[in-house]
Length: 345
Image (cartoon, rainbow, N blue to C red):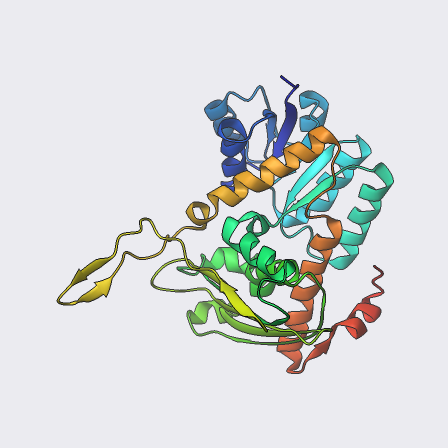
């Protein structure tokens, strides 16, 4: 049996706790050797649950004491750059939750550090690893629906997050739509050339008072003529609404929501079923297992990142472009905006 890949987890909050649980119970070939969090009680509690030997408060301690092969960065976005640069300096591979950072300049510095050290960096866009969305990509890439004409992504949360979270989230496009920006690139296998975004507060006025929106529609154009739309809402009263459809010259492929069961009830009052799953951790558990398994395998075997620093950068770039379009009220020609930011390939 091969030696397990040793992991240090930075950030013992909700997503860090989930990843630690999955690495400990469901991902083969991984061993969590350290957990770090500035909130000592959170780190101690997580370490106690999974018998993690090193408990600390900083990235430096996690690397020095845990001697990990890889760092799992699940801390707040403003800490990502420093954590990745420290890992790169020690030759430690990195799995980093989205967004990679909150500015393009920061991501370019991360890119330099990663390329200089030749470490593996994978960004946590877990929806690429969902079996349903992966099948849509397969149908598009394999020509099963002919020439691609349109893509539609629907992403709605069951309820808005607390206002305290909204204030520090980076905005709807950076916090929520960023998953869909990555997904539209993944499904289409190309970069969009033009974007138009609109948004408003239709769910909770307090979100507007916090300087954000809770409802948005984004339209994207691709060089080959494909159109894509992304629709977001912070509140779908019936549950977590996550769907996609691709339509082409020879057919269409689509995904449905995930339900707690497959039962359908039929009576004199109608035909119906239970509501979709309500919590994103339930809906995407298997995708988290798949992405972590892929990362562990790549670290162990010397493979390539399936979601690399460029993927992380492009999602942030599109989130910024969407906000620029929304606030400016006009479409954004993405190559022009890219030139303005001085972005290369």
